View 1 (tube, helix red, strand yellow):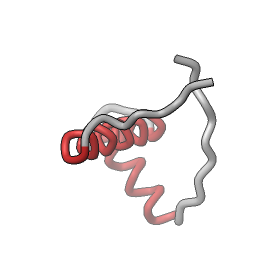
View 2 (cartoon, helix red, strand yellow; view 1 turned 90 degrees about the horizontal axis):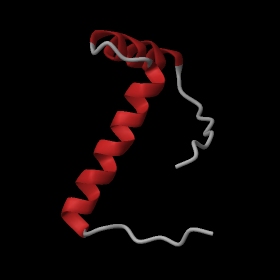
View 3 (tube, one colour; view 1 turned 90 degrees about the vertical axis):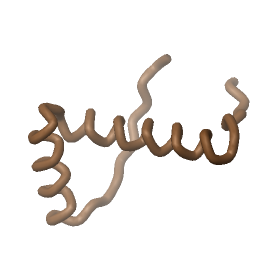
Length: 56
């Protein structure tokens, strides 16, 4: 699967806390965000069923 780019806006305090958490887990901030996204998708699919989407 090819990686895509996503830009987000985040306040400094939240970003600093994200870096703190990621560092505590031995991850980069990017890796921590990817894990949070993956966990959110898995939780949603457990509650609502698999997300079906079209790929071009």
